[in-house]
Amino acid sequence: MSAAPKRSSLPGFGLSMGLTLTWLSLLILIPLAGLFVKTADLSLSQFLDTVTSNRTLHALRISFGLAFAAALVNLVAGLIIVWALVRYRFPGRRLFDAIVDIPFALPTAVAGIALTTLFAQNGWLGAPLASLGIKVAFTPLGIFLAMVFIGIPFVVRTVQPVLIDLDVEIEEAAACLGASRWQTITRVIIPSLTPAILTGFALAFARAVGEYGSVIFIAGNLPNVSEIAPLLIVIRLSEFRYADATAIAVVMLVFSFLIIFVLNRLQRWAQTRALAVS
Amino acid sequence: MTITIINSPVTVERAQSVARQDLHTEPWLVRGIIIGVAVMFLTVFVVLPLILVFSEALSKGVGFYLSALGDSEALSAIWLTLITAVISVSLNLVFGVAAAWAVAKFEFRGKTLLVTLIDLPFSVSPVISGLVFVLLFGAQGFFGPWLMAHGINILFAVPAIVLATTFVTFPFVARELIPLMQEQGSQEEEAAISLGASGWRTFVVVTLPNIKWGLLYGVLLCNARAMGEFGAVSVVSGHIRGETNTMPLLVEILYNEYQLVASFAIASLLALLALLTLIAKTILEGQIEEGQLPRDD
Image 1: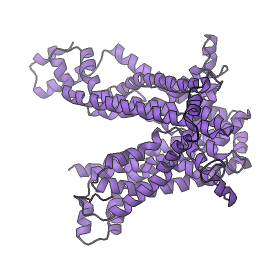
Image 2: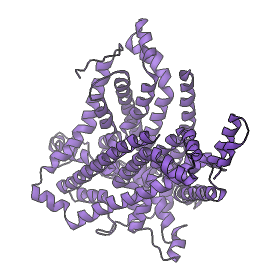
Image 3: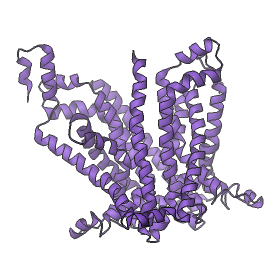
Image 4: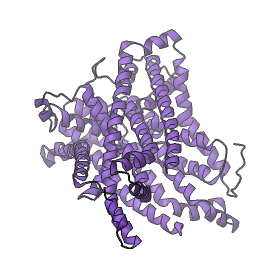
């Protein structure tokens, strides 16, 4: 890097920067670039055939569609949880606060077998649901629930610090000016939280799209019914169809980056708006 | 709803504290429903699965549980998981400190891009994180034929497992340290340098004590993910029994063979690791906040 460190008289810029760039390139950038190089093994029409085959399209639709739905549930549930944790006092509050991180810390395979056993037809929750005629395990509904599980911490943890720091005087001012509690929440509090909410939503969505471990056990993995895109990549690899696997991976990556990019812009827009409000 | 208190003839401070209580609280029914939904949701999705892991693991008694853990395949999986975690965490520790030093202590163009690139592995599916190494080192991969001709095993062996794990856990340490070190600034280091300390001595004596809790925090999270990684490792491991199975992979194999209790026994160890990590994390968060308090003065 040619840019001279301006304000700093500290040593070690060359060494730390060199180490960082080398390591980043060798471990992350070059392997990821290999993904795009490998796709070039396919001609354009082969690539399109692979990505637009029924099975691939269905898997992509399952992964992206259910991840979006799950992230929406995480958004609503996350807001309720964060509101309860920050604004109210109830027995076990600190415990529940700590518990929010478990989906992030629990290895995905463990989550996968636990959720499957829980929601299986003879499981603790699966049995009562089955008697209501709702089948969860080995259906797309199961995939959805596993994605909801994996996304719980994101909205809560991004919104929590913002809600804690939110200036109570703004709320008081709104109330003094005659706003009802509901108006204060929807017109004052929610707009200030929106950037954090969008960030949490994007993180939960990105995580659920690519999620593998906690989903494959409960999914049932029937082609064209309950097969997620990451699993299809694994299947293509086990058939030694590397180029096909890579094509699906490239589509997933490009789509995820696009969506995260859009959400980022949206978040920035909301941030300027939130500043305007306060 | 409760605006009348504004007119009450109490002191401003009292009015504020009363107002605070009233304006911040929803009617008790709404409050109850919100708390109820939050608690229900977390109980169904988080508490029940966790309890289930331990109750299934112990469902055939402690003797069976211990024998499942003492099985030779289980022991080799535990060993491989530990080795992989130690190597990946050490690599990412060195990288994380270097990256945080470069990003937090210096100004340069492209900093935002660099930070975004460091975070990249978070938004890549674990399966794709494994796939990239298959493409590099597999039989049809870029280096595959050369490696095969020289008899070097990377894919379906320990090196690929370590590489995939390191890829997935790459951002953890850097991510914790960068904001912490940015907040702390570099006056203390500059003072040490101007008093004649060497760069390395400054880092060890001044910087390291300041960042030790944040560093430990990052290492803990990195370690938890390294030991629990499933998707990426599953793609590159080859599932050779007793050789390239980590604990999460063994959980899957035993589960698919309907050895449910043994599977949950291994899973319970991983769940225990997650719980211990969270407890340590809670304690460390307190330490980090305390460490930052004097700085505010």
